[in-house]
Image (cartoon, rainbow, N blue to C red; front, top):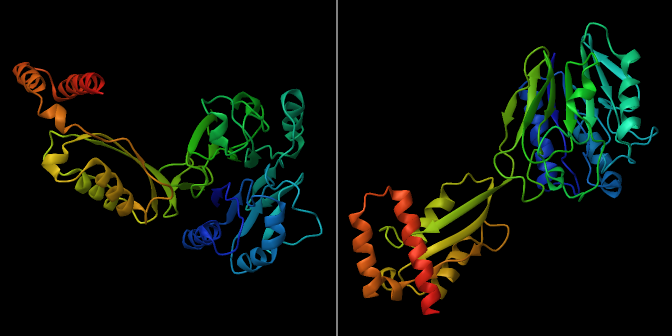
Length: 352
């Protein structure tokens, strides 16, 4: 039994980045010959999106040879009415269970419950579970055993969404808890021997906190969860610190860093540090504008630029003597840079 597990696609429009990401995930399902394709909540961003896209979803899911199980999440909990069709190969995981190749799939649709009520909800699953442990639970909520912040779960603020601990699953005969709601990255936790809790992360960056190449979870039943890298759009933090004591020009340094990124990476660029306008033949204002113009086709928002021209400090006799004394010491490069930058900041204060 081969399973593909993803979550938190947050579809809004037809043929945009999110829609094309879903299509690419379906292609991976075909390529990997999966038996079941699981969306553990928040396929849609909100109800109106589901209404607009339901027909397109039916068409998309009609050309597959695997089953699709969709769990209602907190964003789309009210869109899966029993009389609506999302495709002949699609099952909405409500309160019953489904079985494929002697593996039982059980879903807990999102509800606004927590504490004792949520514990009772989990314990109510016991009669539905296979005694041989061939059970997979679909879940959409927060895992409290980790150091996630509220923003790691999307844009919901400080509200709690079905918060659980790994210990809540100890007495349940479940091999995998395939979860959604945590957006930031792929994350696996061991519940007990041969039992795992898995967040795949969002398959494309939904918010700016979701940086780095995106992944989904593909595994054979009985094996550990597996992080499968994707070629979908993602944000990447690019922090560049300019150093006036390095020969490379500042504009060229930024250009190289941006060109190194894959095409599907969207840089969140921050440029700090110091440069010598006279040596590089460009003013501070001109350099800032040149960087903005150079990266505007790649960056999704205006870069954060905090660079400073320190030509007057570099030509200061007192600072030159300081550099001579610093060069006589046997500091490693990192310590030397820290001391030098501290001196530069002090002289900027004095001269301002």
